[in-house]
Length: 611
Image 1 (tube, rainbow, N blue to C red):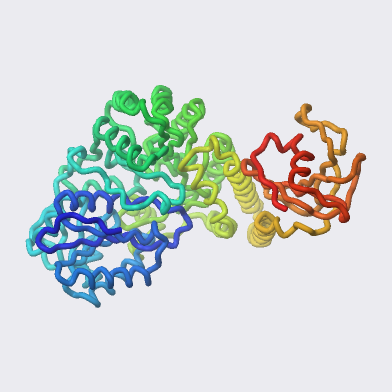
Image 2 (image 1 turned 60 degrees about the vertical axis):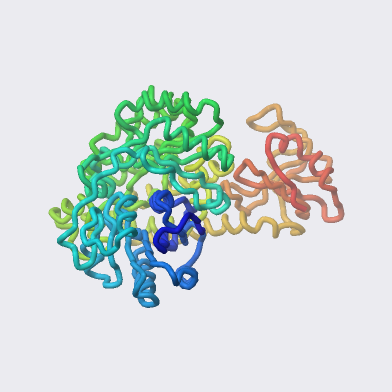
């Protein structure tokens, strides 16, 4: 996206978010958006290439960069890349390419990964000119204005490493311009726009880079904030300009000193708007009063860092709170009908079978209370994470490997369980996040179809993990684990195949076993009278894990079994499964006739008929 402003000294900046192999839906890159907004406020031309959000590959990036350079031959070029751990290989490939085609282009990196690994990256990659360390708005501006300055606070420059000094923290976030909106809503594929109300987190979780990142600035203040009027002003601006109905608050931790007062003021300031929010918080910050205030604000999803139900793991993570605190937070959110996203780390190098079982039992207990990321989540160890020192001392980790450290698990049995459980989860990860991404952004209310599909999958995940744990306890995992997982994957692929290809059943002959004959009442809802026969197709599995349901038209007497042709499929938009309509092979019916025949039950659903 090209962002125009008055030129200053013939300079132009390209900010790049690298491609990703992730199956997740894209989101705005808020770090790049703030940098661009700040530079534009200083009259410097900026262009953004968000390859991740726009689903572009590395080849496209190279063509884009070539074109950008060709159009700006009369300008001084600055190119900044924001690498993540997961995009490191793309970072190396693209960085080397940029310097190869234009050695005069000033190439820098920034963000958590680059900042925390500045020494390694500058030493390893001779094409990298500098790294913007920590908060980057002011540091980048000063670099662009005078790239020859060897002592810019917050800029770690090649050949001047010893001259580095940290940039002072931006204490007044209200002094920054609003985040730039560089993506059209359509490119977010249903994900909400993001907004920031604070930076940093007061916590010191040992696996998290947030605290380490903000300590790179001085003074070492853990969290900074915007005031309610500034936040309200940006929200109103977004509603007026983009007609949005939902926002994702992307703070590392939403809560602050005097959070209740901030919430009350913000509630009052945006009381004229119809808008919902999703945000993140530490579980100990969710009190009964705050949950009620969040509901008044319009919050529909709160992500909390539960992390583990195993006491030893929580101690390893330096979480600072026990599992009982998370359970209270979950109950407060549930009481206020706010969807709780429980962030969870199922596997870590120190966990025992008992700890793993405690984690599994926690997920099973809270299936109705929470939504979860895929529960095969591992603890990946970066060299800059505080937990690395702990694991090295314990002898399970060595200072080898980049960007992740090589790490061994203390329990051989846990390794085996993880291996098989990963195999299962990876076989249907995309299907899982098709549902969960929507629930995490919008909550469960009003998304019944996605929620029902999600629950089927999480229940199956728990069942499989519990079975693997039992196999391990009974010393059977070596002989039974692989066969069991292959069987589960094959069965699941069959269900997915039926779900994805149910339209191919049109015109096919099937046999229906009738379990609700004409003239009977629904076994649970006695107000539903079956005016036609209803049953299931034996051995044809539906997405709910049961055999495929079917209506029978054209027979005016109760049946036990019927063979006929599939003449229509009823696609329920707010349920997890579809219904077949079967009739004698010599009879045909219109869509209106089918609607009239099935309305006694389908009137409770939003549906469409495929013929």
